[in-house]
Image 1 (cartoon, chains in turn purple, brown):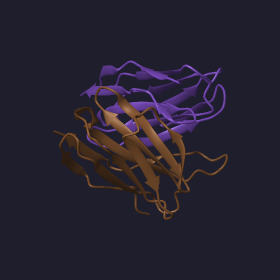
Image 2 (cartoon, chains in turn orange, red):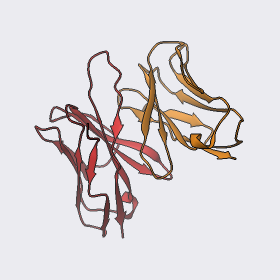
Image 3 (spheres, helix red, strand yellow):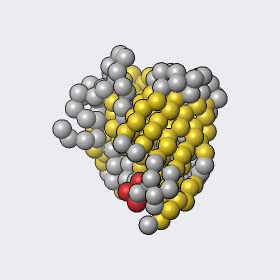
Length: 107
Length: 115
């Protein structure tokens, strides 16, 4: 069945450093969504990408959808302590979620 | 606009029992999806309901079932509980308009502990 793999599983950064998480699907995706879950909270929608090669920015966050629509990335520039949480990608007809990347930011 | 609500928030059951979880979507949302979240397995898709019909189903045993009512509220039932069913069960609702962004809004979840 369809699988969505996400790496890395964990990432520790110093505040101010950049952070990137990668998402890879075993099949072509019609769209991909990104969510953020703060510790103890529930996933919150960040963005949806639908076009091949699409790049979207939200302040310090940059989202990319691969040309083949099988991979995506989320890049955070100059991380802040408020960026702490787990970032999930999700895609496919059944909205298959990746395992998530947990981001730790040290002040 | 009120968010997605789930009841109960916490539940403790013993093996072999059954449990029913409830989810009220955002007003106007017709799609409700259920997910199981565990530290080891992440977010696992259980099923999605749209206009009272199950549209998609994940790879879970038949002990997991659900339904949706005419007001879009949804319930999830787990029968013959096993220790491995201990998890956070999340419900998410979305508007689902053709060609629109299908943003899912998650509820706070029900924390189920099976002893």
